[in-house]
Structures are given as structure tokens and as C-alpha cells.
Length: 308
Length: 252
Image 1 (tube, rainbow over the protein chains, first blue to last red):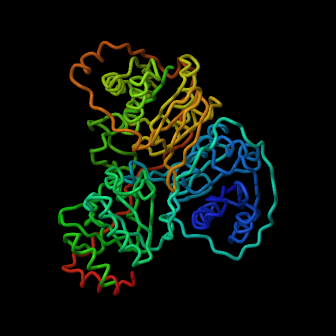
Image 2 (cartoon, chains in turn red, yellow):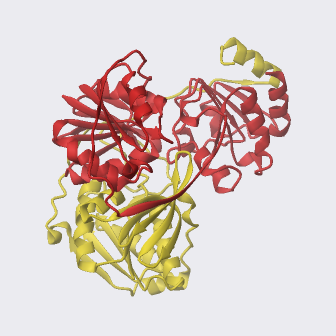
């Protein structure tokens, strides 16, 4: 079996954590070739070559792939799809955008958000916001798969795969990039952080979120938020943890003022240690928390920040 | 411009999902069903385009069991103009896969020639997040997924998308497929007079065979199980105790 793994590239650099975790899943399906597509991605290609388990790295360096436009990326992958039995990518916004398009062009179904690889044709994936896990067997000639990275360990370093340049058809001209408004932050990236501190509706306002950020900075943690907090405008959309936001599984997850709606739990319940701080002792978050503190978060969070 | 909005009938998002003990799936018999929440946002966005004079007709489509007619009536009550029901299954437990849905929609798009298709970004039952992208691929159109802002600008749409690091704005040539994310709008409730009026709006009944689409699944469901349960831990009495426990567990 030959597997094509589409690397996650962010700002021209390899997103090592997401790519290395998807690589672990891909290795269970066959020999892996990594595709690095983007603009100015020579270094990203070199970084991908050091991942343990990659047989080969293909680099498509072209302005057409610089802004993750799905139409251009899909055409590139389609042009090389005949050589592979599996096309795999981590479940990032870029892959969620492009992979179903690739699947449809190949006349195959997509396997979204795969959380387990049973064998080369059979996969586990969460459905109903993680309330059920479905095992499905694909009869399609090519398997197009996105990987829920939180359930796989990252592949290590130490590889030395050959790097080859390739070119694609370039810009299809169906869509064009206008601008990015990306958060500038020194904090760890949410999906790969070792510790995540998240705030919910209970935090009450955007100003009060500073308290969550302060605790996060003390712990060198990433900041997350519940959907309720994002919908209320307390936190930006890219902080949202949950079934329709980001799925995280850090060593420590601290949920502050989060009640624990099912869709939020789906995004964090694989965390190793979960702490919940909430004044409502009946909040469902306590059913998954290792350590629950029933307290007013406005007193408990500053105290915790000071004492850690 | 005509806007086409596909809508799906799914388990109501407030209903607790029960996995059947025999592993055959999720129990949907006698369970409250509603329009997929992301599709409600898509319908609302189409209505707002019409109210702003950017769209002149809204056609809603549902592909699934006959009962999806109720979902279409909800969309009509919100403000869509007419509906197409494509019956493709008899059993409420049969989920038509996104690829088959996209193929059927592509045939309908050929007939209806809309200038824009707005889909919900994902259905809350199978969580595939695929139909819009697949439809766009089959039509050879551009796509703008996970939209949080939409502006029609001549023969293009300017779309702000929710991406991993924040927001990305792209311009996509029309016709195009756009998929709605949570922050695009807040859908309206249908008023009682509009619910009554919706009963008289046209609803065309078709079958998947009318469009010559094979809806046989590509994925065989081997089993459906409960996720691994996580056991509740302990309640601590103070911040000091919490800090001590975290240190003991090696978490900080």
C-alpha cells in the first residue's frame, strides 16, 4: 500500500505536531510519501524529511498553493493520486476544506476525522459530536482520510527521506486570497499545547478573559474557550474547543466557568488530567473532571495563578 | 440571482443520543428531529441576501426520508420560496452519504441553475463536513467553506472563513458553493402566520432515481459503539488542595 500524506503548512513552515501525528496514523496503512505544498516551502520540505517514517518527500513550491485554496490543492493532489491507495491529512481547517473536494473528484467517499485505524480499509471515527464511535469499512479504490490528531502520538525525528520537487497545474483562478487575520501569539498552539486553560460563559466578558490568559501564561499554556464564550464575543473563534472547533488532548486541561455541553466535551475529554472550576456543582463538566473545584472563578482563578 | 440551500433532517441537537445495545447504530425511532443547525444558518443567510436585494428566489432541497418534508416546511416558514424533496430512503436510520447527496444536488443545480449554493458546514449526525466541498468539486465551481461573513460583490463573493489561526478572507467567483459556520448569523424563528403560509408554498416531490443517482453507500458500517467512558474524579475543597493534587499527579 502506498500512502500520500499531505503535510500541514502554516505560514510557509511545517506544522510539525499535526503532520507528525497524522504520519503515525498513515504509517499503519502503508509506505508514506509526504507532500508539502505551499509557497516558499523548501525548509518545510526539509523538516518533513526528518520525520521518522517518511519514505519520500515531494515539495510543490508555487504561489498557487500559498494560501490553502482548496481548488488548487485538490487539482495538484488529483494529478498524482493514481500512485496511491490512501490519501491522508491531519484534520486541520485546510484539510477539511480540500480533502472532501479531492474525494469527490476521485468519485470516492471521504473518511473524516478518523480516530482509529483498524486495518488498511477499516477505520473508527466519532459521530454525533463524539457520542458514538462508528467503525466503517471502505470499499473505494482510493481512501481519502482526515485524521483526528488528538488520538495519535506524534512520529519522532531522525528520518532522512529523499526530497523531490514537483510542479502542478498552478492557479485554477476559481478563488483568490484577499487577506488573513491571524492571531499573533507567543503562547503554544492550541492543538499541540501540553497544557490548555479554557474559559466559558461563566467568565462573563472579554475583559475578564484576561484572568484566564494570566493563568495560562503562568502555566505556559494555550488558551481555549467554549462555544458559548466565542458566540458571546468573549474570545476569538480560533480558540474554540469542541466538536465543531478544535479537538485537543493535552496533559492538563483546565476548564474555567464551562458547564460542559456535550459538544465541548467532545473536544477535550481525551485530555490526560482535567480540572474544572465552576460555581454550579451540578455542571456536567464535573462528570469528566479528575479534580473539580466548586467555587467562584473570580476568586479561585487569581488564587490558583498566584499559588502555582 | 437564485440561491439553492440544501437542508438535512437530523436528530434535534438537544436530544441525548442513545447508541443501540446491539451496535447497529444510534436509536432514531420516536426521537425529536429538527433541521441541522448549520443548515438553519445557511437558510437564514439566503433569506438575508433576498432581503438585501441580492437574491430573488430561494430554493431549499432535502435528500433523505419522506419525513424530511417537515424540515423543508420549516425552511419555507423561515422565508424560502419553494422546496424540492428527494426521497432516497424509507428507514429513518438510513443516512445518505455526502457523495450521493452531492451527486443528486449537482443534478438539481444543473436544472435550477442557481447563482449560489449555501450549505451548512457539517451535519451534526454523521459529522462528515463534506457535502458542500463535494458538490463544488462535481460542478467544477469554486468553494468558500466555514464562512463567518458573506458579501456579494458583482460576479464574486467575498467570504471571511474561520480557519485554524483566525480568519481568512477570500474572493470566490460565482456561481460557487459556500458553507456556513456558526458565526455567520443567528437564524430567525418562524412566526405562526409564516408557518401557516409555508403550507401553501410549492414543494416538489422527487426520488433519487429521477436523477439517476446511485445512493448505495460506499462505506459499510461495521459497528457503532459507545465512546470510552471517562470516570469522574474527586471534588477538592480549596485552591490549596487543588494545587497539592496537581503536584501529586505530576500535572504541573
